[in-house]
Picture: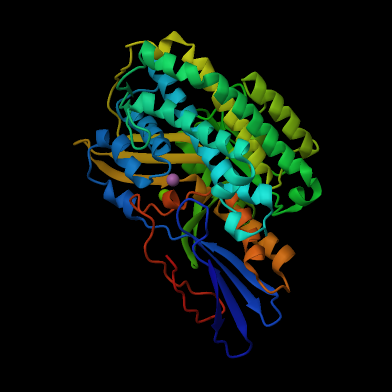
Length: 488
Ligand code: MG
Ligand code: NI
């Protein structure tokens, strides 16, 4: 949904095009394009309103409430916040190493979350663009259109997501907003019946995951030159990495690679994140711009998420996903793959890895063990970091002697990708929209670029689990006067 707004300017006539809200991304955001009389693109920006309310809201609350409270932060990624907070809270109760049962149950939960989140994004939100074309008929560019035109693909996508949700439900008791993690462990293990139930659906989930990788790959290769160039930017990449260099979605040290794949830092204890990362505030948006401190604001921005993780890791420790990774990396010509649309392919490699990881843990007797809790000596600071489906997620808490939270800082994945999404839409605007009358089909190209990152605007806005209801008109540096109306 978009509208053209004439803006008053003393020297020249500029036109502001607002895409508001960005559709088929999770949450609410807004793109503004500034065009001159000849439709030359002067500026393209993604605005996300980040409220600071949540970090304040949890101040004064007892720390043990955190893993449950933070789920209200986002209705889309509650499991990711639950686990990141739980890892931070483990430290508050003096625990650095969970029991094998609890560690594996949390990892299994995280695989379920990654599988369902990635499947939802690819099939429901992105496949319409990829299957029909970015500028295709708007009326069928949605999951219903996919189910009609490609029922086999659409149905498998829906069922694959359902399987991930069932993994979550078995562990937490609910598909959305369940619990499971406690300070220092988990509140229950899986019963033999629950494991048997999940094993029933596993073979199909593995098959569909392998097919998802193949589909994402074929879609990318089908128009290789276009797909490589679309929203192409070069960037640094950040994420967690296991001590041996393997992809690890749940735990590891921080690794940053530059655009050539060279190491910026590696195996950094994530509790030291504040020494390595900075967050910049800019006047025209409330969302911060994190960057790698040693590289500075101009050059230090980076990407997180599936593309960063698959590029950054040395290998994947499940065989099918590893074969898919090797295949994928061949398109990086010896370095990282930079194409924004390659996010989809990398995301499906992680779906396959998640399905294989679920298989591994379902056959591990530890997940049925009752040895779930550990305790140590109380600490006043805890920092939990995980690789959420959308990228690295930081939860940082301080508590006082009464066990109440005194300080909280969160960096969500979408915030880390903020600069990259802005760079990507600038590239797309310059390539596809410059000098053109902006039609819906052309404007959708901007959304396709943003959607590749799978942003969760709900998380990024810290809006207590609600979408921001009111968007402000932000000052443009050119002193423009623009009237904005939100279409519900
Ligand atoms: Mg923050
Ligand atoms: Ni979220």
